[in-house]
Length: 80
Image 1 (tube, one colour):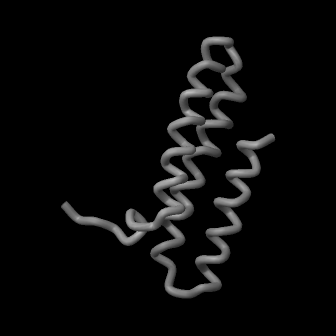
Image 2 (tube, rainbow, N blue to C red):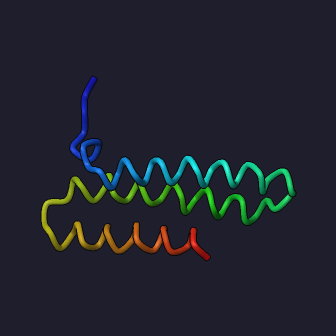
C-alpha cells in the first residue's frame, strides 16, 4: 500500500480526529432535522484534512501557505 507524505503529518492526523468528532455531532444534528447545518458542518470538517493533504504536495512554501489558509478557514467555519 502506498503511503503519502501527508499521512505522517501530526496536523493531518489531528484533523482526522476532529473530523470524526464533528461527524458525530453532525449525526446528532441530523436526528434533530437540522439538515442544512449538518451538511455544512460535514463539508467544513472534510475540507480541513483534504486541504492539508493537498497542500503537503505543494511545490513551494507559498503554495502550501495558501492551502494552510484554506484549512484554517475550514476550522473557523466549524467553530461558528
